[in-house]
Amino acid sequence: MAHDTAEHVVPAGALLLTGRRRRAMGVVCDVALALVVVMAASQYSTFTDLVLGGVMALCLLARRRLPGAVLAAVLALTAAQFALHDLLGLASAPAAYDVAVLFAMMSVVHHSRTVWMPYAAGGAVLLASATGLVGLPGAGIEPFLNSVEDLLLFWGLTIAVWLMAFSLQARRLYAESQAARAEQAEREREHLVRIAAAEERAEIARELHDVVAHSLAVMTLQADGAGYALRTSPDTAAAALKAIASTGRDAIEDMHRIVRVLRDSDPDPANTGSGRRTITLDEIRTAVERARAAGLSVDLAVEVGEGRLTAAEQLTAFRIVQECLTNVLRHAGAGAEVGIRLREDRGTLLITVVDDGAGRLAGGGSGGGDAGGRPRSGGNGLVGMRERVEIAGGSFTAGPRIGTGWQVCAQIPTRKSDGAGKRVDPGGRR
Image (cartoon, rainbow, N blue to C red; front, side, top):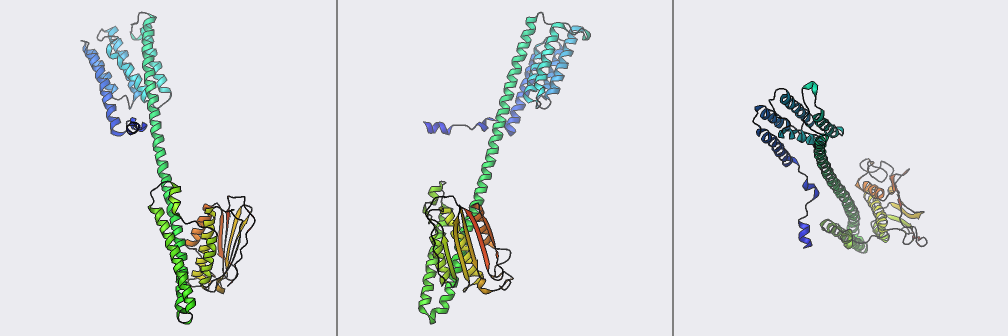
């Protein structure tokens, strides 16, 4: 039963007529009011009454576009009606088609976009009713109300109609404001969805770049080394092939994880990330060992207390070190010396990666690059590292050193303040 009820719930915005339906309904209402006035005028035998009632009805057809002008015209026609009645006896006064005055007042209250117009319309009709008690001797209009009680009856009817029109206007404005809020909320939701999709695409692009670029760089250098050592040193070639296989398996696992994230339709982040491989600082040692096997001389120092980094911070640190090693392998090549240091100090993780560019001077690389052969404009790797650090709220700098080599520095604020003492794990140079 609750399910059936929920299916029949109509959104509040659907109750507000818009577009063609609203215009069509407005035309129907205008024609209906005009017909009421014409039918009321047709009850009188005098031709003047029919003409006056017909003109009033025609004026009401423009009540939505020109509500103030319509009220003024109807009041003028009413004054002419009373003058013709008192002076020439050519019209009936008061008459049933004088209800057009109330219709015109309602139109001003309901459709006017200015604050003062509804009150001016109500005051004008009340003042016109008051002339029925005293008349307008200068215009030849005699009083048509016999007592104050009759005047209060006219005023009460006028005030009741005015309040009803004011209430309808308030409800209309409220419905329009709710519809505008709903449209604004929908636009904001669509904008947030686009932002989230763009951020997700950027994250996936960074992950793909880190996985593919690093793995392919290590595997290529290992394969080249294995090809050279295949005849002279079978053991070295076997170790290189083993490293290639291990790197390829890790790359395939990371690619499967990324594909699972792309295919997963579960909106719950906890369920989406349930199959992810946890990246810790220990993965840095694995990346360093592979870089050493590829021919780099790496000195690693990790000075970070146990439990002082979140999983996201450890992943960011690993990706930065991994990308730096990839760049050294790609641009400096085997034989380069790299110094890596991770240090946590006063709630900030400091990451420094320095290489000597294999001893080549700035500009000595191919393509007019720096000491390590890196393009001066920076590639996707540097952009990805900078984005990761900025998302974490830190700062990132990268550039050539004086003489030879390249230096990368990153500072990332940490969220955990408790933890054990520092852990130092220097890696010896091979």
